[in-house]
Image 1 (cartoon, rainbow, N blue to C red):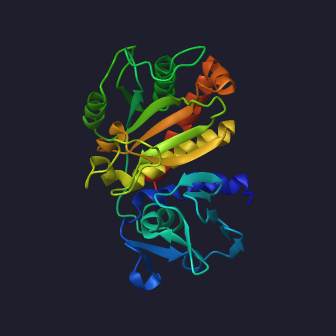
Image 2: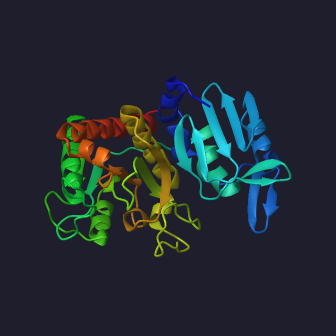
Length: 331
């Protein structure tokens, strides 16, 4: 299902306000036919298509395709991937099949589908004037290693460029590090949490044992009680995390940044994912972690190494943050 670029833009221009201010409780029980499998609740694709007034709902093999003027969506049975207006999202639980129906978990309905698709009552605006920029790694912690350079250096360079671009747009910026120094994860969280009226973005580049691995991915904190997308044996979630208070804002900020980067560069889209990184768990304000490509991929490393590419990335992320602010603060 190919989606027009105009609709792609609508994802981060209009529905972001839904993402940020949507209620986090389930839709009224009378609106949904809940299917319980073991201890998990689900709703059917048919039910969702009816509730969200989709003009078209098509079954195509394992795919379920939804369409209305402002939304195009695809679910695929057996995967944790959905596409909304051409942007890839990673679900907390897989889409499953039961008695001929495609089912999505109520957790993903509430934390992702409903905020994106349905305009909810907006109780208050969210405004910010400060962006905390966190260049990942530093000092003795080099991060990923490429043939041309180290992740810690690319992270810092992109972050300094982003700082300049944001300040041109009137934002106040705070850097967790401004040189090649080692800052603990706890210190990064403390710096961010000390700021008022702020959002947080942690800047990284990726690595893999496979040279062919490529693409851009953006992480928001996993909803409470759900598993992260990335495989980390230390990532089990406690019952409550500071960052989960910002679940809706986290996914909205991730959507804005990720969608702008995908549109600007057309890289492999690895999706908006759920993470439990410490810098996301402890933050008391909207926060994301951005992975801008693989230093272990020769083609991507060559791009990342070029200053003009990093400058274009900084401009793109700054534009996304500016758009995010214009939507969430002015309605």
